Amino acid sequence: MEISIIVIAIFLFGLVWGSFLNVVAHRFALGKPFFTNRSKCPVCEHVIFWYDNIPLLSWLLLMGKCRNCKNRILFLYPAIELISGLIFVCVFFKLLPYFSPFHYFISTDQLMVDSMNFSSVIPDQVFLRGLCMLGAFFIFFSALIAATRSDLEAMVIPQLFSLWLVPLGFLFAYFNIISISIKASLIGAFIGYFSLWFVALIFKLVTKRDGMGVGDMELLALIGSFLGPLGVWFSLLIGSLSGLLIGTLYLIIFRKEMTTRLPFGPFLALGATFYFLFDKDFIRFFFS
Ligand SMILES: [Zn+2]
Image (cartoon, rainbow, N blue to C red; front, side, top):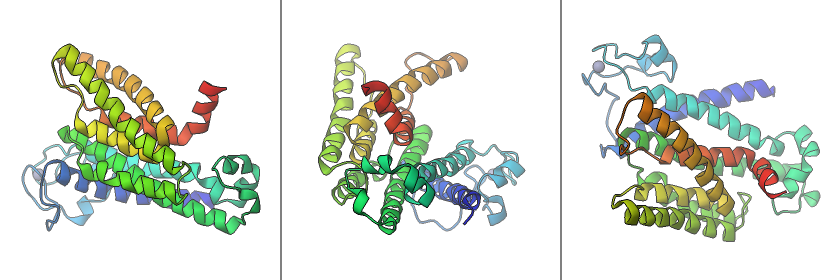
């Protein structure tokens, strides 16, 4: 099959899935019942019909306004849909060596790193392993996207998108579905949780205020269980730097108080995404 068709299909699927994640994250973050009949406009409660509910496209056609009451639709909706589409395309490209015979031959060294001896494995098994990995990281990135949406909207990260999925990371590592060992997965989750717990403790002792939410610790534990200790450190590094930069700009542009609380989860998710996509480059840059 033509690769461009696969990429477009994954992107479109990502848009639809992102639209579903929007709904799940919104309802869990605000403690609304999950199973309700129809999507409604939060302002006028007008039922949203399917043709006004097409990911990205409807938002563009309606120019960001409800058809009935003309109130603005939260920008988070199309943004999360677009991000989902883009992320799942990136995840596919990252795992492409497992799916393409051409890539299989040019990047065997990359496959070798994955702690299994691939020289004796037939490509069929490589393909199967690629599918399993795709499934595992599909769950992981869905959780990061839902956590991002909840944190941006309500400053909470429901445990369904973090702590509850940590055992899944252990399981994937144990059965060799993701590239880290079970030891790295356990240590990653532990370091993820307690590094932020420690930062929060110091922050509280110094400023007498709560700076870090438990949700951030639980999210970093999830990142650790899927990406290992190095993933935790790089997510923290990139997350802190980008959070500091974007947070400062936000405070200046919107003239907020310096004590305004900002969500940290989306920045951790951003760091984890960068580490997942460019882990080999990061390791090469810092450790060689
Ligand atoms: Zn409305």
